[in-house]
Length: 519
Image 1: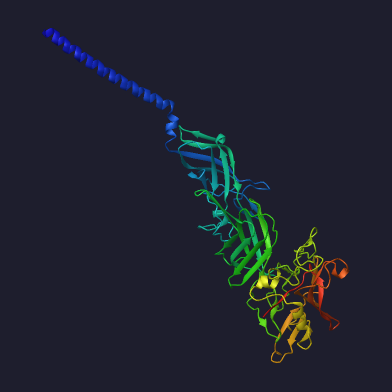
Image 2: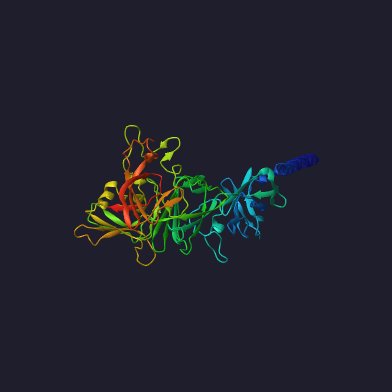
């Protein structure tokens, strides 16, 4: 019995050991099976965890005549491309920053970018952004190249944005060495044009050393790409502040400029304000460099005065666009608010006239066969109102005639108004009204422009009125009225006397001076 009991005990022990062995075997088998799964599907498991890679890219900035980017160095009047040591490039996967790369020592269009990125999987593509992935152009200080020492806010340092997209097929990911390389060269594309504005007063030679400069346009001049919020914003006004005030050459990085009207407003250290407006500027193309000389008008001369001659209106003591009483100021076609300096080379012609085209003929201030749409300049087309603002405007025909009336004023021609040998010619108009006989204004000889030729600049004072010449029906029925006209003052000095003193009509496209009045 004992033997049987012992045998039964032995059998039970054996069964337990067999069961335990089977369990251990199964566990081992399961463990082995799990290990095999790790090897087979390891890539999906590993790529779900972020890994650090060392990334190397050979980067190029084009050196062709039509470069894809600027990088930036100036050689004469040509902007050359180059990489600067230490420039930062952001590596992006959509809106996610994978890391940054740094440019190696270089002084030309090619460099090696190297740095660390962190990724959990191989992207479909990656984007590389020079300087920043948010391309924000505010804060510029008008400086192109960084100083030799120290930090700065130059275009070269902060606003030379460029980008390149690299497809998966050009990227090699090495899981063993944790390195990422790009086949071939990554060619960066610029996201802005670089424009050098050289600012001058209306004489075209006196520089304006600006402390601030504002660019305003009907198109877009700023582009903000925010990949964190997936937003794109466009701006139509752009202000540079903190300029040195010691140079008239201002550099600006402009993104996505679409053409159309462009207005510049500059302020100098003496708080003088100058403006410049040009219609249909054309396109500043990304990746290109431009040099633009700008002749600006003093919008609020510190010396402008309203002279009361005892008449229905007060007269400005200087011309619109002038820097002094004896300055001719700017020349305007009638109804245009962009003026041109004496000797600027601008061609005053029918083809360049704002309110005319070969298809529709006159597009404003026109006759429809029964009536005129306007008989006087609208305020938005009045150069004095537009440039000086406030209550200033161009005088009417009747107001010029009031000034011409011999009961109101005397008219005296002088060939040397200053009396210092500078030979500033023009006419002195002195009030005859009781209580105002000590008041006078000086109208410099301006001459008149047709094409780019000025006639009579020393013997002829001619100034626009705001009144349209409506004594004809707007058709080409007489040579004098061929292009339609507006009224203007005409004072002609010859052989020692005033041979002509009248208000007469003139072709609207001609370039003539502007004197303003106010209530």
